[in-house]
Amino acid sequence: MRAKLCAAVFAAALLAIMLSLVAPVAWAAECPEGQHNYSEARLVPATAMEDGEVDYICTLCGQQYTKLLFATDHLWGEWVIDQKPTCTEPGKRHRTCTRTQPHMETAVIPVLGHKYKETRTEPTCLEPGKSVFVCVNDAAHTYEEPIPAPGSHSFGEWREETPAGQGTEGLEARSCVRCGLVETNVLEALPTTTTEPATTPPTEPPTEEPTEPPTEPERSIPVMDIVLISANTIALGWFLFLLIPYFLGLAFAKRRRKAQEERDALRKEVDELHGYE
Image 1 (tube, one colour):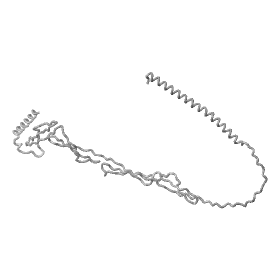
Image 2 (cartoon, helix red, strand yellow):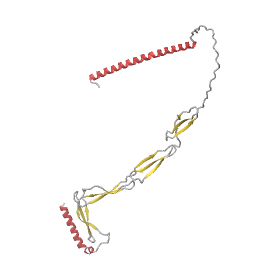
Image 3 (cartoon, one colour):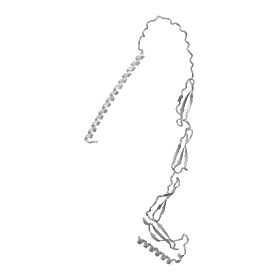
């Protein structure tokens, strides 16, 4: 490293002597602005931990300047926000390296983009609603979307609130299943009925008649009853004829299922005894 530095210094000194001998008159005059012809005179390379520098000299007028070369291993501090980003505009930030020669690095913060939150107002049967969208990052960005109304009520069934009576009106009502609007209807009163006192004819004294012993009526079974009894008996017989095989089938299926379960249990015990899975 020291050898390279000595060689660079020697080369710069030699170049300066040669230029002073070759163009003494040219160095006496200054170059017009922006027309210098700079060349590298001395270089101290930057390392990971230390800054370097490079010297430049104009070959026409001899003007010199030095440029700093920052260390390659930076010690950056925290980011400092210079301009916060919005939904549509990016932001800016910077951080500073705390090496021997402090310097800064700038970066662009991407735009946030719109992120909307919805506030909904439900429509009624006749009045439309709306949805309001407001950006949570910038409340100035907002828009609305209408929610159309159905345009009519949806009533349920009529229900009697007050029953109508004789001479008094009743009331029935129904409500809309969407908005809860209640509609009423008056029930007509029932007609009134007037009762007149019944007139009883004059009673005459009963006349005694000779009484005869009551005769018992002959007991006979009507033909229709006989037909019904016969039909019920036949139906009961068919019912028992169909029901008995059904229960026998259920008992047989139950015994068969029990035997199958016993065989499966026995087979499982045998498999476990022989080590089968």
